[in-house]
Length: 569
Image (cartoon, rainbow, N blue to C red; front, side, top):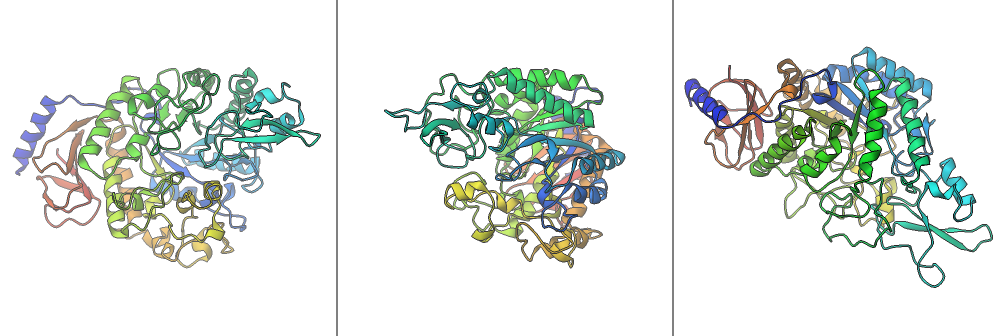
């Protein structure tokens, strides 16, 4: 296709289809930001104990500034027994000694802000640790006491209360209820824990819980944090009466494919976030809330980001979409319709600390299905070459979309899922509660490599590493990839620089039909044409300057599992 023919094609498409996903004007940084998730225990270890820490993060912020991200989101670093890697919080207003101190946090925050990087912290409001002072008080109190009203305690069913209050199952496997023992040694009431038995659920119908979390929010906002990622944001409120519920056999454990689950997505949860929105609005600097809300559709997810609630919600329907042109086109279109319709930006994400890394996941097939750390299957052994090619192409496509994008630490290095961890090394409670039936999430949490020849590949000066790192980490280290024009790190740096230069996050998308078949995704954002080939045969690219490509291109032929950015003006 000639340049003039391309222009005609694009102009025709633009007149036939109105742009979608345009951002609302304003200084709200979170509408277009690229946010990098740091899993603290696996990012960088300054103390040498084999577990990442806040000082380690501070020491490596220069690499993130060089990468070109706008903000970082830190998974929990609060005081915790670490039964679920910090998502079991014992004190929400202090740093666990494993990660350092409040002074270390303040130093990290100051260094990040000095580099123009905003900081989002992970808040866990659905449940606490069983070592939290409130829960210890509840266990010591009698049934019906105010201390127990902060959590969900119930009498059991059956003649002597020997049966759990209902049939709910834990996300991590097994029953969602654990029975207590009274001071005299007799069996007592049961308490609800949607996750591990060491993570009792708060009772958000109790106003005291909401008041406590306002205090927690203000503690961190007063220290200068730029926002909160809210864990299990759809799970705080439970249906009245706690009715029995049997999920579909193939339903996602976090609720992403089931409606009317009595412990997910209840209407009352929106009042919680309206209150939080008002609190954040009192502070200068456009503080932001992002919801982890696993819901069946994009439209339902968009309810969490109405103008007086959250500012962002993770786009899990997009994350779960396979490498297929039709499905990608559909979920992108739906996202750019639903989120802007309520005044919110679309968000895009491919990996995080709970799912199989997309450099492996995208190579899985119907015979070798997509594994989820909380789901019933192992990710198997995907083709690493295919997986990396698709991961690079998927990221090239994603970073051209209007809205905000999330990256997970190590994906800029092309890290695959670690699928052969020894059983003795595993840490995820999902693995233990299901006696190994569920794969767990350790494979995406292995500490990342910084240097090829250093102890623990530069993660820790002592060579200690809380999860074992595979030998292939050496060739994937950041140091090995710097300066290599073909490396995944170089691709990410160039994509992020061009995204910022062209302000793609604030742009709008127009679909383009290049008549290249059903396996091609093609759209324009401003004067940038994006083409991705998800099919089984190469396709001929239109004329125009190729700015960036996810992999090698022979002339004007776009290979399978590749994506490209083309300047059209």
